[in-house]
Image 1 (spheres, helix red, strand yellow):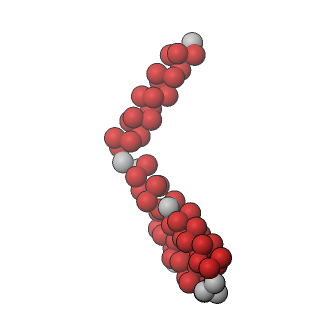
Image 2 (image 1 turned 90 degrees about the horizontal axis):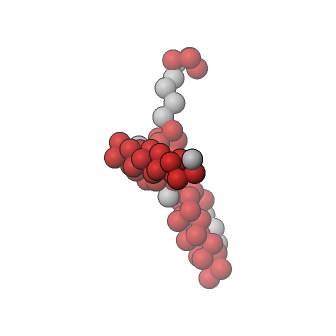
Length: 76
């Protein structure tokens, strides 16, 4: 498939990133400090995909637009 015909799916890229993060965390040494680092790495590396997915819901988008409009009215 040529570059022009590929469809970029950002959510799929974030899921792939999360999988790579998990594999990286699992490859760390099993010391107490590394377990803490691995846990934090997994928490921060896997959260963007569901957050992005949640942000794509129309209700969320509408709420953000409404909040921005209200904020714009306050500053006018």
